[in-house]
Amino acid sequence: MKIKALPLFALLVACSTTTPKVDIGTLKAEIMQAEKNFNDMAAEKGVAEAFAAFAAEEAVIKRGGKLIKGRIAIAEWYENNSDPDEKLTWKPDFIEVSSSGDLAYTYGGFEFSYPDSTGTIITSTGSFHSVWKRQADGSWKFVWD
Image (tube, rainbow, N blue to C red; front, side, top):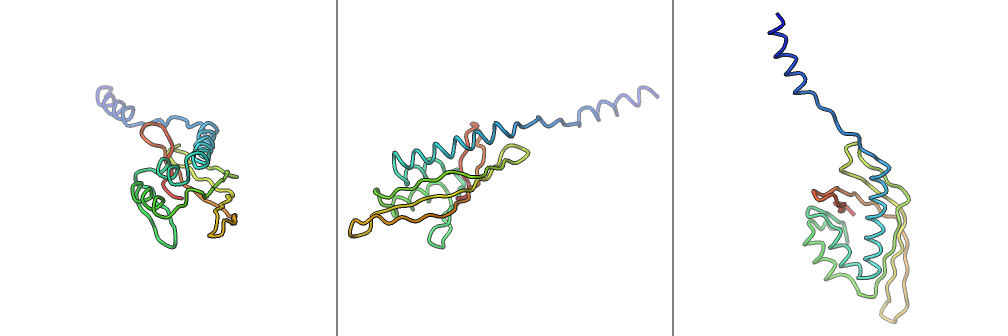
């Protein structure tokens, strides 16, 4: 009887999984830093370059009522539809991370400004919502913005 129970016990031990604990606080801090780095790059190098750099390969954005799918398409859209003089700043008011630690979402306020045809600066404000995905290298890239 003991011999028959041993394989069953070994199978149960082999199949048991222990999910490593995810430190949500640390991950939220990583996301906040990713948002800051993204915002800072937009200020320093332009909106187009920042969106191309922080988009995951499978990222999607909605602009002008259309979905732009994929990092390359997003970069091309911004190259064709942004003005080097436009400014975009934002900061998340809220961050949530999945219990698995591989997805997160943020939302908060943004300010967008650009010069019109007369040189007058037009400013608008609003809310943003982004979904972030942890990449294989441990970095965070947005998959929805």
